[in-house]
Image (cartoon, rainbow, N blue to C red; front, side, top):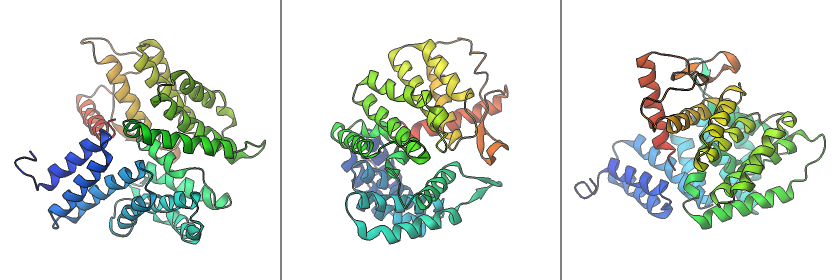
Length: 345
């Protein structure tokens, strides 16, 4: 379509997305720039391009340009101001970790704003905003310190499959994580450090997985699950670690083990931040696991799919896999398809 419509903003955007997920980061940035330049009437479309551009710069560890994109979104885009403010502050903070100490006053001010910018839809908080607020509050209550906040967000936004397409970038991320692990001395009674250590362990496991050091990656994920009783704040780490073990078992062809870990991630943990995001990924993985064989009965422990529903527990979105409604199944299929396209690696 780009041959027929070389200046089509929509086609340029999708061209950028395809290049992005294929690891062609610089080419993707150019496509997003071209999409922005192609039209000026639909300003909101510019924000979609800037959102993707900031992640492209992030994957390159170009924190300054990522911050520029996030700053525009923070000032102009009405979608989730709390998220944009948090990301802008975190991109600046990554520069502080590299020596730019002059930014700390602005960073502190930005993190203070995040809780007040949180929105509610249908009376419920947006899961990713709750994650941002929690981390902003942790920064302010922990001596104005966070451990690689952007890398944690990259993981939550399913960015590691993209980074894995560019081995030199993956090595940079891995060295960054290893340095943070070296610097982080776990101390008895220091709650935040235990959580931070396990968060870094999850990120390290992701790097090792894509560096084809599978056994070491599996050890990282199992360590998180084995130490879940020590976690005081980041309760999302064990279910995500269980999910990563399930995905690894799928890649090894160990279907029974994969199904057991999928069940563990889905049913053993509840009420943690970004639960709904993980449930989408679990359902997509389950469909991939069982959908290849026509007529294969679904596991009675997984049941029928249902789209995201509102849960009163913890006041945020949750998912349930118990409905037989064809309409419900169609809705969740559409949701999962959109999610799969957005986070495809």
